[in-house]
Length: 82
Image (cartoon, rainbow, N blue to C red):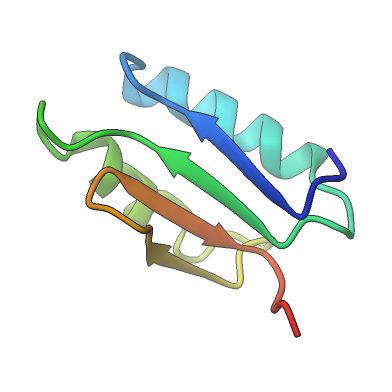
């Protein structure tokens, strides 16, 4: 994974499946990755969004978790983009 902004679609995934995908992306993220954008949707509830905030807020590779460009996205910021 070398793109500075990685986007992962989590629509239709369970929390366990989503965590597996996110953990794999975090492990594969090289030094050139600044953000992982997680598309989880919002019309069917907020369980994935809430899980992302709870599980990855203090993850060792995540600088911070922030809302995305719309309510159905959350971004894991790994590095500052200067």
